[in-house]
View (cartoon, one colour):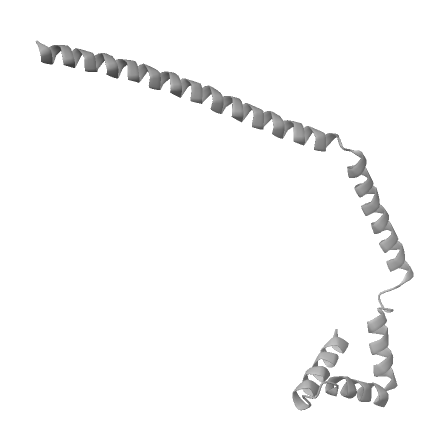
Length: 130
């Protein structure tokens, strides 16, 4: 972590001091040439050698195996996907059937209201002619 802070500080200071395109790279190269341990640390961080230990490799392999097993299980277990699609189709079909039923009910109610309106208009016309 300290190394990353030092690198960022060097790069930002160099970028501010030397606005030329290769300025930061030249400053970093000069700093690496002055201190061999600093250069080795930068190379190790860049190659991520410090993080690769035998226990990390085993843990990484175990984690990878676990993820691959889970992915294979999901890929083979298509039943839940089929059931989800079936449920969505049933819900969609049910909703469409409900809308059709409601539309028929509204059409019947509109027809009834028209009949009642026509009857009321006829009664009003009869009373007006009397």
